[in-house]
Image (cartoon, rainbow over all chains, first blue to last red; front, side, top):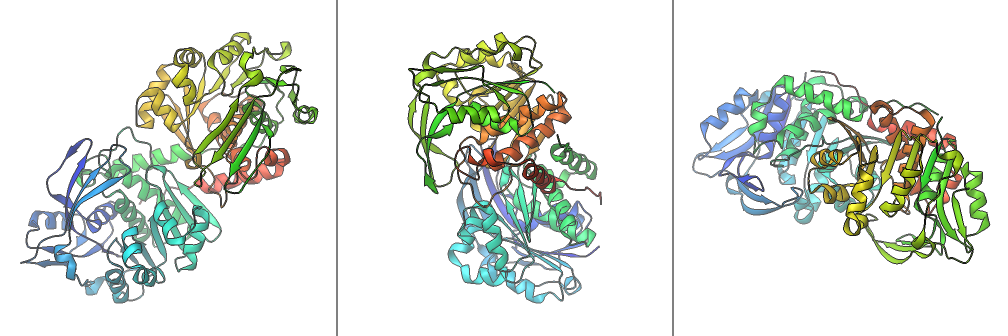
Amino acid sequence: MSKLVIVGTVAFDAIETPFGKTDKILGGAATYIGLSASQLNVDSAIVSVVGGDFPQEYITMLQDKNMDIEGLEVIKDGKTFFWSGKYHNDMNSRDTLVTELNVLENFSPKVPQDHKGAEVVMLGNLHPLVQLSVVDQMDNPKMIVLDTMNFWMDCALEELKQVIAKVNVITINDEEARQLSGEYSLVNAAKKIMKMGPEYVVIKKGEHGALLFYKDEMFFAPALPLAEVFDPTGAGDTFAGGFTGYLAKTEDYSFENMKTAIVYGSALASFCVEKFGTERMQSLTKKELQHRLQQFKNLTQFEITLV
Amino acid sequence: MSKLVIVGTVAFDAIETPFGKTDKILGGAATYIGLSASQLNVDSAIVSVVGGDFPQEYITMLQDKNMDIEGLEVIKDGKTFFWSGKYHNDMNSRDTLVTELNVLENFSPKVPQDHKGAEVVMLGNLHPLVQLSVVDQMDNPKMIVLDTMNFWMDCALEELKQVIAKVNVITINDEEARQLSGEYSLVNAAKKIMKMGPEYVVIKKGEHGALLFYKDEMFFAPALPLAEVFDPTGAGDTFAGGFTGYLAKTEDYSFENMKTAIVYGSALASFCVEKFGTERMQSLTKKELQHRLQQFKNLTQFEITLV
């Protein structure tokens, strides 16, 4: 088992969906990634920053879930990053109501010494230069996974391209893959993005599943069709946490093992959306995860009989 | 092997996509269904109507592809059904430019005597009363599959519900499933539709694949991600033809075999969109189909290792 380094936001979220509304609750990419990876009992480290307003009980919870928090800087007189958003009725789109960067504005990530040798690094959605700084602090990682979004394509494309050139895997959604590549077909988009650096391209299609591209090969994992999606916040990060957690746990970076990692990510993400915020991920048990992995198997496996 | 009865349009289509434009070419639901099922060497019968303007060479081609055309009525002084449409740049939506019902206006379907004992019936998209008339002419079919669309939900809902009550399988797209059931979640939509009659509900999501629902079980088959979609016309009918063709060929109506039937349908549909109209389906070989079935297997199969 390798260690896992996770950089990303640790934040307060206020969320509104057709099912209800929350006050400021625990959120952030690194939080979701870490909670998801913790299901695989991986030794992970969170590299992030919070303000003096961040409750100790949240920090204790992260530690209880196997996360090293030496790299989680606390700026006593600063305020924690805050995001607020409202989902539309179809749950596939949302409006951002508030973004307060606060302590994130001058964030300079520090990877803890005894995690610099980790084989797997998960670069959660953040400014590309912050992601780059984490890459530069690592000794000799084998698998760097990058998550990003259209916001950075719009306002920091050159810096983003610098990070993309240094990673092994990029995970982005379908619209972002189209924007980054200028190609409408996802097959062509993945080919172009591979030329920018990553050997593996993961395209997330939300409720329509995820595609993994490697050389001329493809793998597809569906999302589990759910009767109700309660709150999609953090689903993409939860996916990334399951994906990288599984890779760190197995230390097997073959295409075959990547497929299983994608299924783990999809299975974990399917829990995340069942309740508001991180609630479901905090209560999730190993048995529930195993049962859901079997559901994914039943959902997709078939026999071909040639007639 | 059972016989397969196919009712649906045999038509002229004029198609415009971002890749080009056709004059009046061969089209129609029954044509696509029959061409697709013919890949499985099924003994099928087309129940439809054309005008005196329908070329003999097309009729000969259908016969060459294993289709009985005794039920294909030719109205000498009538004109063949004509549809013209233009696809938008994303290929997921289209505008209908022209619909000329012509001989379809007074169509009264006649199932050939020696096909009334067929076990499998494919009711292609048509007025529900025409579909109902075909059901009533069958002796004792085991598997009646219904395709329909939102147009009939808008203007002939009561008649449509009468047919739905009599079929074993319904295939509709995601938006239509939502409209018919009043449920946004496809899981809940499928449950409601099952209560209307069919044991099996197939929800087609175009480039996002297809879902099969049966009791409390689900199966998902992706669409093959393609570098280029040339013309989506007939993809849904080609899917239905592969699905019912495989069922007729195997005479096995279990949930497990339905899964394989869905994959055959998806594989055949992935060819249909590669060229304009029926061109690709006419040239398709058994070897190409077998190769693509293997691609579907590679795309979706994975191992779960519990960690």
